[in-house]
Length: 550
Image (tube, rainbow, N blue to C red; front, side):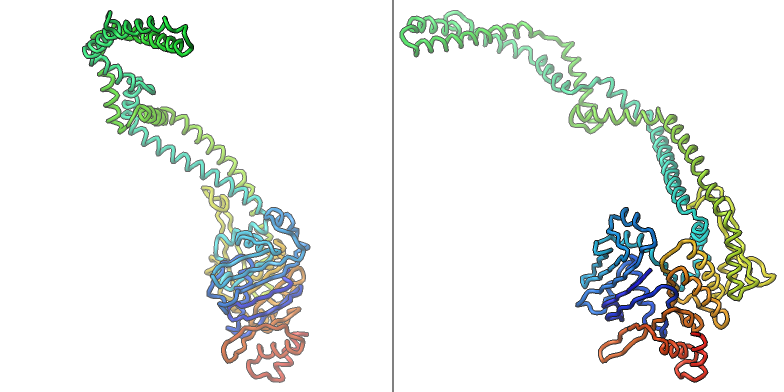
């Protein structure tokens, strides 16, 4: 439950601090006094987005802090999963800085708004005036039924499996689209692939062919120059080798005189050995040179094939052509293997449909089982709230497909008066009737969901008199098992509270400020008398106020 609330520098609020009790708490105040501001501040504690414009004094930060006693609500697992420090008296704080940024803390640990929103779902349910209209909203109707049926876990499982089902369907659609495109391009891709495969491309083949082509194209020049080189090396008397051998003979005669001359002799010997090897290789190369027009033509044709493929595919080299070949193989394989791939996904979809259908059937049965009891409880409460002839009808029909909330279609109908026809609930009920129906629904939900705190913002809209008194009785009974806070304009409801706070505005020379105070017994009588009789408090209003409190 919410045990304390502190709001500083927020909208019209400068600084307020209140302590709250168990049971049924009343908040009253004139229109525009600031009740909605308090709800806005509470919303920030529950993870709503901050508005920089709500800072009262932009030279200071806005701070909203709430203390919650959560000892009896089994939230340790949640705190552990959210990586938060668990405290039986948990403190949530929001800060809005003058820079426009906001920060959130749980027990002084910084948290993201998503974590705050998840935690807030376990702490407070704020029922605003416009939420009454959600009775006609199909998602809200499902939420009510699933809460009472305790089917939240099953619904979560359904939604998880439905996502997998949708993913498989998308995968199938994408594959069919790829297949259609691949089929259109299959023949052309296969032709391109065959061209590349026939070329028998390998890394380095282009360089080898180009080198061989140059060799075959220059046979005469190679023969002439190799012959000339051999003559210069081997020709008697004037050849390089003959001259070097004579030099070696001269050096051998003096090699024994010193190590220096011996070194000269060894070096000339090494040169002669190297030139002998070179001469042999040149001679072999000369013998291998042979004009071969057929090989020249074949080499040229192979090169032209490579050059044409590079031009066709805008490739710079063989490596790029090999990459293109691999991509074409994949595209061709898509077409050739498409039927198998489609078959596998279709089998997976059928299997997932079966699994999803089983969960949806369980969900349907759980919902169906609680509908009669829920209708009976709502109609019982509506009788107490002055709608004895109201009849509620809830239809749960199996849908053809897998919808967001299951394989069900849900319809709520109301016959508000005796002998009346059933109509959609949002069309059949007036504003006051909707408020009463919503209170009945909320009181049943509160018992099921076991929220620590529920706040009603003018749930009494459109009702008065004896109906208001009965509505107050339901709120009071709810307060016996949980903390109930009601913002109200009706004295019949205000008189039932265990505690009573009044919100009011004070004007100073420079500003208007919203304040709140807890009323003592005599102050409560005066406040109720004001609510009963207006600005002038008469004896009868005071007596009536005392009677309401008694």
